[in-house]
Length: 317
Image 1 (tube, helix red, strand yellow):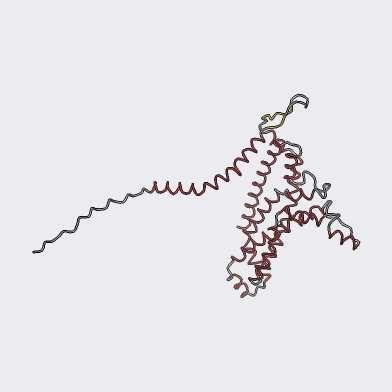
Image 2: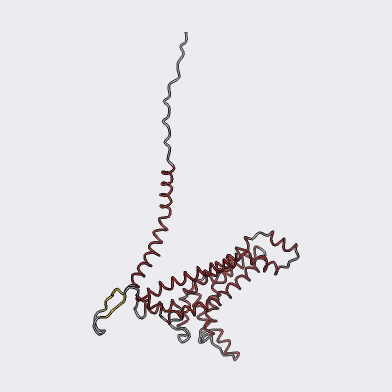
């Protein structure tokens, strides 16, 4: 007689713990903070603390006790440095000079970059890669190195261009009056064409090719397609490159600083606001006033970039 065996009793598994949505959200937030922590630390030490230190310096001023022979003390003066900057004619002349020069130079640079991008858009893919790499070389070269290259070409004693001109009987100079701005503008345009051309070319490559085919079916020629189809659809990148270039021109420093060693009579100490700040801090030793100038220039740059972006976007819409 066989006996029936019962299967072993298995204890039921404990119910899984349910995580509340609030707790899950907290965990996700903590993970996000940990991922962003390296950036936040870098942003704190490279932007927030230097700006705070500069603002603290701008609230003080050096003062010599007695009749000028006593020790120098740093005293708190509040917003006096900022008031002095706002009424400093040399500083504002440098800002205005840089803006006028930058407006003309940026227009030429972006115009040439746009023309090159449009020409490359109609070339075979292999040729486009070759020309892109070639035009990007000036941007890859460090700014100081490229400035030294052009400094050699502009030199009145060592320039091969000047040597060739003397042999042909032509006498001219790269500096003095309008020639100074043309020489500096040529250098900056040579540096910036490749990078801006790459950005514009990438925007052109992203446009749907059906637009071009439809325009060709309507009888439009290539120049008409470029002007009426391509350019209106890449105004966003043109605005972006223009805004970045404007910010860069207000921070113009290394190029005129090196060119000043060749033509000190053509490039003054207040030729650009950055040159004025540099000379104020490291030649006269007035770090507090230079800090105030730096902060004022940063505010001016931000306001102009915002106004430029809003004005161009309003025209686009």
